Amino acid sequence: MAHALAMAAVALGSADASWISSATLDRFLQSVDRPQVFGTQFLMKSGVFQPSQGKYDSTLIPDSLRGVLGVPTRVQQEAQRKQMESHK
Image (cartoon, rainbow, N blue to C red):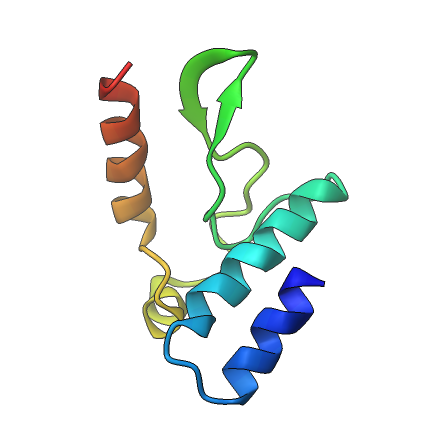
């Protein structure tokens, strides 16, 4: 439902909706045990603070499309993960 609503917001021209539509797709994919495609979701491993993106097909969506959708590049995501990890 969240993804459908986010896509409706995109269709209506909401400037912020592109990122949330990407994030809701990734969240849905995780819920059905499939790899996320944008890498927007970070998980904690085994209750220990080790940020991970879990199953993630990082090669499916190019950085050029990530930019259009307001999603960080793979390099930016890795920097974000390292920053999260440094705050243990």
